[in-house]
Image 1: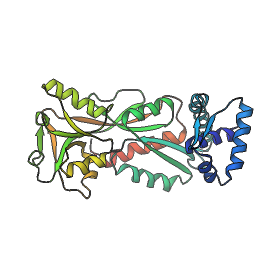
Image 2: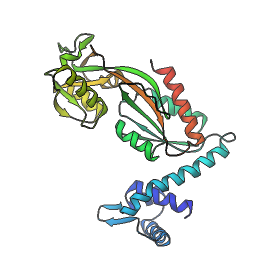
Image 3: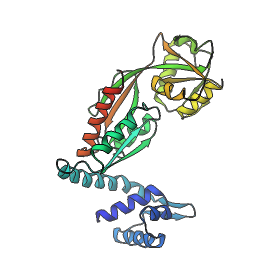
Length: 300
């Protein structure tokens, strides 16, 4: 196996189409198809099934893809180690982020890294906390930013960036969310807009409600934080959002928000790194930069 072959297979898997992969590599579909056929012959098995809707990994391809990515990560890590102290960071750093990641972090991080390390490529993957933890476990991303509920993170590869409260969000002028705070028990009987299960915040809220002797009335399930804000503004249901998500959802919408108390719903914004492999020099530097940005812009 050559690194160029591995990069080609990983790229095709990412695009899911020879046409899109060929366009990204400035080559023709027929030339790329011949290259892939030669790789499959040399490697001794089919990696993709060809269908009218594009390419899909075979079972063998699905098993092999994480290992191929790990090989590329190792190669990039070694290259970064050699170049790190001389010509700046290079290669790719993949970061998994929840949709409600504080909006101030991403542009500030990008501007700093772009100014000091123009050769560095940052790839952002958006997903739920559970998805990001899975990506970290398999090494699909090197760095993850997500919310942890309840106890503070204590894992070897995880640290807390900030702690925030959850807010009940409704339309502007709503009597329930019109005050600064709202007791948790007030959620009983309210129509709620929450993420689909499994979701750590929803699980936490359901557990807290059960201890108080009631069940949540979830009328709409949606995994988009922005959609939660829109639905709340239209009076379709009440959303439960972090202060970061509240500030983003307020943009262009007439909303009101009350901090949930008695008890409060604490959320810990966590930074985690993959245990799947050693971090590259670039990943370590990016993680350190995230810590700096969080320290400057987020209030613990």
